[in-house]
Image (cartoon, rainbow, N blue to C red; front, side, top):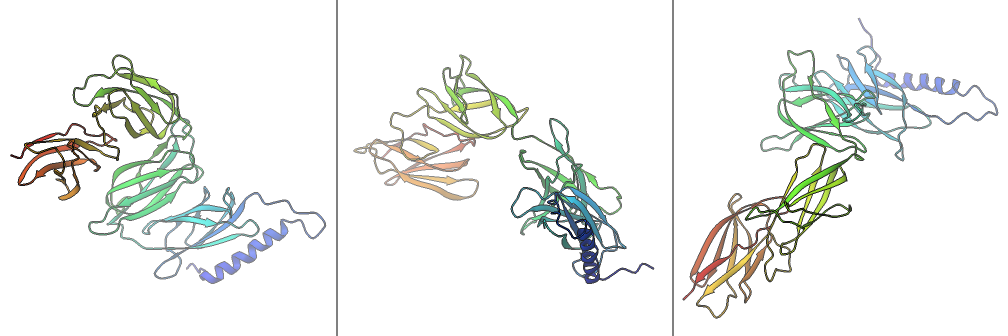
Length: 397
């Protein structure tokens, strides 16, 4: 029979033992000044959240990339050479995983003078309703492991708050996360100085399987640069626009050739601002995701109106009121056909100009004047595009 100390006894014994180590490490009493510590000692104890007793199965604990095993007999593990990190005060991510329990992961503060003690309470879970996923997170270019990379699993509950289970990698780039609801989940991997990446996967139940489900990630360093190519065309005719000025972030602008094509080298990966200008067209603005292997961009531009509205807009046009003194005061209603509500309302000026700002979607635009009305449906695409020339002619007498 295994006799295990209680939680309180464990902590007391651990403090005493580590105090001896720390004192002996000073080389005795004397005039010599002990060297500054270069790494920390972290003691991780793991207990059942409901019973407050040690677990009946082993657990793996990772702090700052240092991995160790929490045995059934000991109920804790001593992790040595844990880096202090660069934060003030020193912090490192902790992750504890055990079969039949939901992984616990969060940052902890690290002591620079004494051992750091952490007691992790873990919630039991049903292996028939949850899964275990493990894998490696590495640098896409060099294949080197990424230490302390965060891996997050998000499960959308019907009619409830999303369930999120997190984990962290060790110095080999390895992570293991348990207690993830089975089914469709979104998985996000992130690391300092790297681009975050997300995938959607199906998590299988852990019961009946001794090995965790495998899911690896290769992250792109934030300093990676690529060449971005694309074409600029008229949104309606799809004809190329030559001589358009294309700018990405703060790089020098380039001009499109006779085919409307452009190429911009040395663009940092990540989300970057794209600006395209062309004579006779509205400026095109969009935030693009720059990634290796990305497809060429297609920029579709709208022709400028003679009197463009000064306020922000995504849809604009001219209403002509046949039989009225001028084109003013026509009511313009923009109805969101997908969400079933009025997204915007405005009135025309004397020249019949109107403009509204709405999000991408499908809309029914209705123009009313006195007892008359006219409607049409339009689809506003995403990517920062605008719709111009959405004109109406309404006979009022």
